[in-house]
Length: 514
Ligand code: F6P
Image (cartoon, rainbow, N blue to C red; front, side, top):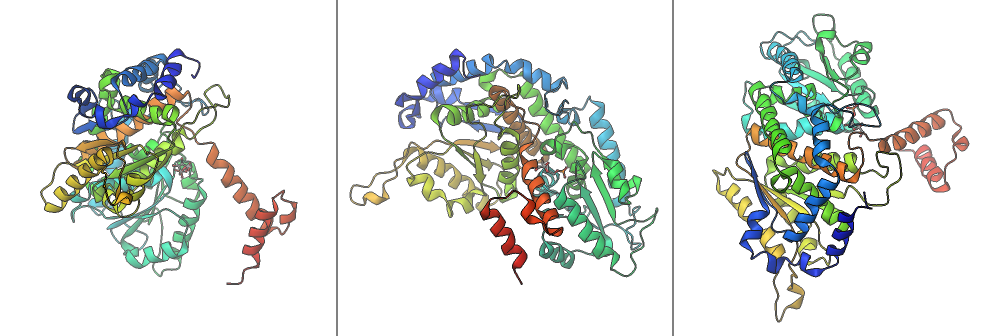
């Protein structure tokens, strides 16, 4: 990885100020055209980045030196790219119109969706299903929520409204039960492993509440519960009817699962056609990723820019700023996709690596961000890589306002401003950003957008020589939490080798009398 010649060349280039001088390079129209890309409904302007054409060329050499083309082929050929779990990553097959996985998955989802919409499914209260409550967390929550909010304009009375219960929080569950029509609700336990503590705790709390309600009579013909999981036997074990379980394959990673039956809430809320158009959009991006030369390949260029900042310029943050409230969940989805996929310290050979990988990802709906943290962007002394995301379809003054604000922010960060007499108003400028425009917020564009970032992190994982499809690190915290809980319950906390701070905090919890 680091010992190749290209890496050394990029380290030398990063020391030279001319490669970080936006105010002059921005005037070069030829450079702007070289750093602007198009694919389907997406338009990507990378020209406001600290990126000379010489660096851009070297970054493409780095991709070549990492054998990226062959690795992309491995992904689509369903070879073992998830090395620690010894399996392929199958998400691209779910959007390939010629692949049986897409056909079989859609068939199963549509049958159940049609039965629900035609009142053929009866809740345990003998009522038709009019609402869905998705109980899931991480990739079993963020993808469906993001897509449903993005496609909010498609929701109509014929669709089924979807509510989400993700974090474990009694007040959240109580609040949810206040706002839904319990007897007409179907509770969907979405969990690839069917072993995630928060999801199981929420499911138990919901089942308990249902049992306490008069008229709750679950049987083979009526149920208020369904499951979406790669472990159908675990769902059956808690009494969920076979016909109410949508399975999916273990080769579908949690962060990449919204295209699978995990996306069922999207189908109910936005319609089957919309869900299929999302798949088609992602497939457009798949083909673009497979076939386009690196210098005009959107996921590859975004990936290389991220590596340039992270590994050569030495910036550790990254902000995702969608200037459209329908994408308000997008930063959260991208946080998990990037930080859980590439926040790693071991390479594919199991060795500890000595270079940074995932940046610290944050973001929010752009307009809210301007009134929260843009001050630091403009006058903080260091720079931050960031992606602005806007939607061109605007039939309202407010959407035009959003777009012009977004464009103005990128320009202001780049140009800065100096004030002769009020020097604390000085903005140094030369602050980088990328701007992505979607033609419209239709399902196809949303599918392209999400697939682009999925392939971006896969590209980075290839160059970083890491596995982006597992998440061993998150298990440690979960295991310790379980051990603490067990030792407290069995009253022998002192047997747990804990530091004095942690011991003291646990005792504060145990001794608190609320
Ligand atoms: O955060 C760890 C993780 O395993 C994620 O990768 C996953 O999306 C989430 O927990 C939920 O997992 P499951 O779908 O198995 O409940």
